[in-house]
Length: 493
Image (tube, rainbow, N blue to C red; front, side):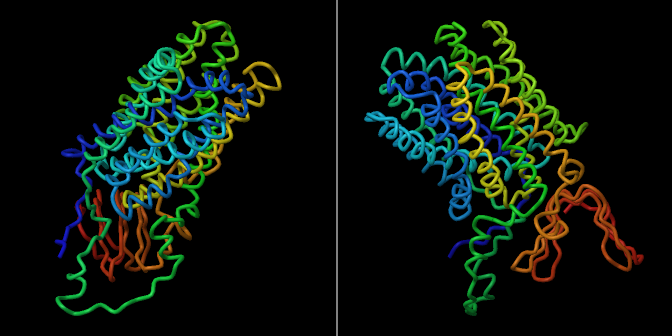
């Protein structure tokens, strides 16, 4: 019989730093492979003699599948563990690239690279980020910044490496070598030791049944099972939904830059190796920017949402400047600035999703947020490719990317709740209507007060849950008191 595992609060250290190391290498060697796949774009276009719009679909489907399958990756993590999902993802993504070696048509690559490899990446991406949210609370942004800075390392190292592999072994041989790189995800996944948090409310079956007493069989409605697995109710939570829609605009612009920057530079007369190095320059900026900005955001001097908005605005300005850069030096400056500002944004994505969904539901929260990102990546590169086919250059493509990025900031401004307060969880009035009768309140930033004996909650940092009529408070920073004269001194749960 399995032992009872008592829930703990995020340790903010310990084995968590090993997890951060594993997530760092997932981003550096694996996720960045998808982001650097634009190097193969020009090769595929020339080999298969297809239009820019059609060729763009390979990278678009790859990243879109990686992101849009995240709810299923989150569900698998909920049913098994993040470790299992990541190891399975390493095997599947490698298999997709091996199958791509035999491709004779563009459609073959759509399925092998786009769907199969994308599915494997999905099983590694969201679960790895979710593990940081489970191991860290106060230092979440710092840990996330260190982990996702691996993407900057990968963006620096992989584009010229991919170009070298293509030149030496052809695109088929290069894909086989990248497949071997994907298998390292299995090693990283092995480092993801499961942790059981207090809000998970994990209870042993025997403890529930009080000895040998048998529990009655209760029919659970299908919709409730779906919600418990996928947490679909998050999509009805306004702050979470607004943030996800905002990410759609930001990623739409980002996807255009990632896929078409190398081809744009080549159109300006830049040689292939130097053009691929532009993505590396962006990666170098991110290497320094991501950990630093993660640490700064944890200092609490400015709201993480406002900090995020500043970064997205900077990304839009850098993107807008690309069409005006008429030489390689100008493009280098744009990429340095873009990397510095994106280094603010991407470490905060998982942090803000955790804020809006809660640590116990972060796998599902990231999954649904990545669906919006995946839709943006599916549409962005093909639309910009068709603009290139119509105009003969990428200027309009980058203008549209900048516009969508700017609009994503405005979307956040439309929802004051998403910028001025912490989330209370999905449901009417900010309170989740849980079918099991359990009420969860997450991340209350300001005082919640009332009169006539109702408890006043001040600065609740973690979940407040009701279980069998007993209220459990986690990490209350200040006083919990009642207005009828009975009060409880401040404590830390």
